[in-house]
Picture 1 (cartoon, helix red, strand yellow):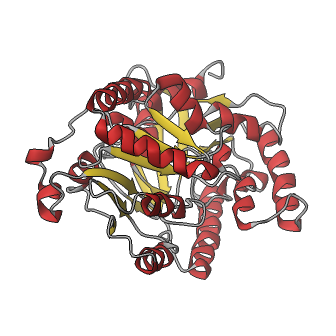
Picture 2 (spheres, one colour; picture 1 turned 180 degrees about the horizontal axis):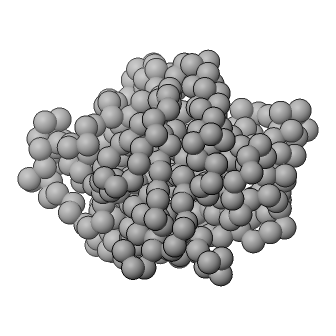
Length: 385
């Protein structure tokens, strides 16, 4: 292609590649002569990886148990280092996401090395109660200062996350938002939705959490709201996903006898558009100690289908910024669950306001399109030909 940058070769590194990684790889492929993806797995949702992009396989990411996850991270780090030092010594490197400490490899490598940060470590460890004075926290923070200082380009996906990263470096942090799996609003009408039919969800106002149920997600907050609205027969709370805290939540729902709170496993890629379409309100939850340092991708999927959002996060989070800027829902802190419950009750009874929030969410989605991957690449190349 005539618009490709001559003699540029790049390796994209992500142990668990998803639609975002594929977007980055395809966008770099438009500009660079040679693009390689080092990964343990590729989860294709919508956009497919260009067949001309070379795939270098490493071990797969293990979600749990924790010990297996750590071992898989360490094995991946070694293999990434090995390939970059042997087979791809003359390539530039673009690191994405997994393992979370993977970008620190630039301290051991001579490559032109860039990274996309969408979970800020060690700040995320605060969810476990780790203090900034903890040796692990202090050591990782020290490595961050060295790594970001040495990097070619440092990207992140929100202004709030950039603020956190600036604690570790004085250099420019390039902020570019990511995008939704869905590029068009193809939300399925309830009367035509096979997911609603399968689970008998007709005539229910569905408040849906769909995603990982891990330590940082604090899904207990949604169970608490379900408890507040236990006697409301119209509103159904739906928790879809998996994770280490799911059994704990299931026991909590059972012990509190909450018939309005139902659990379902992760849906297949084929069923996902139908399960997402079933939601009248989508829920995104982040623990307040870490909510400034993360933006779950589910936030953008909800926007793409014009689904109003209920955010449980801190007031200084990017999620709260989305509420303020786009008027697509409400954001509450964990001490405001009574207010969150009232918001849901009012929304269930007020179709006009619900429609207004839906339209606002769909408009917001226009800022989070697949073209954003190209903007990452444009910023990567800018002034550095």
